[in-house]
Structure formats: structure tokens, C-alpha cells
Image 1 (spheres, rainbow, N blue to C red):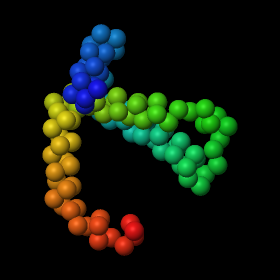
Image 2 (image 1 turned 60 degrees about the vertical axis):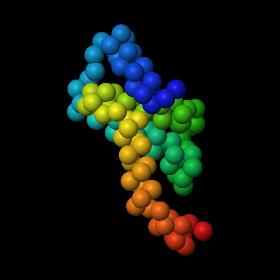
Image 3 (image 1 turned 180 degrees about the vertical axis):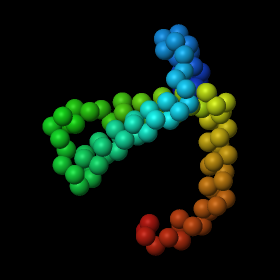
Image 4 (image 1 turned 90 degrees about the horizontal axis):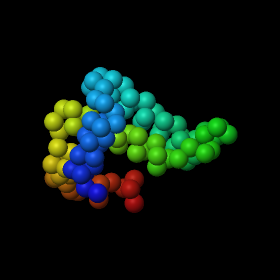
Length: 108
């Protein structure tokens, strides 16, 4: 599935099952909440915090998909074509960081 297709599927789902988009501020709050859930799993599963018993069955991929879903909602609501935005962002990073990471001794 392409990013464009994903944006379309989310829009279709919202309009058929979700009734309508939540407003942008609500979705921004939801995005923050979903990112926090991903952070909690990462911190406890891969970081130094101990994992709570209640977190051990959490599906990291599902939580990441929640983040992506809300991000796609926000893109749709604000008229952002994430395919084009990602292409431009990668071009920017490539130009800016062409030598920076290669010359970083911390990455060797």
C-alpha cells in the first residue's frame, strides 16, 4: 500500500464508519496520546524501565499503526499530501546531511 492509498483508505473509513473527522486539535491531542503509548512500550521493553505485567501483551505494531492512523487523519484534514511531503523531506535531509552522518565518529 502506498502512502496515498493509505490516506485514501483512512478517509474512506472516517466517512463510512467514523462518521466524520474529529477536529484538528482533538486529533493532535490523540496523536500525542498514541505516541505516548508507543514511547511507554519502547521505554519498558527496550529501555531501562521494567515492563509492567499489564504492558507485556501490548502489540507495538498496533500502537504504531494508531500513530500512523491519526497522522493520516491530520494530513487529510489539512490538505497535506504525505507522499510529496516525504519526498521533499528526504531531499532536504539528503542535501543537508550528505556528509554530516558519515563524518560523525559517534556513528562508527
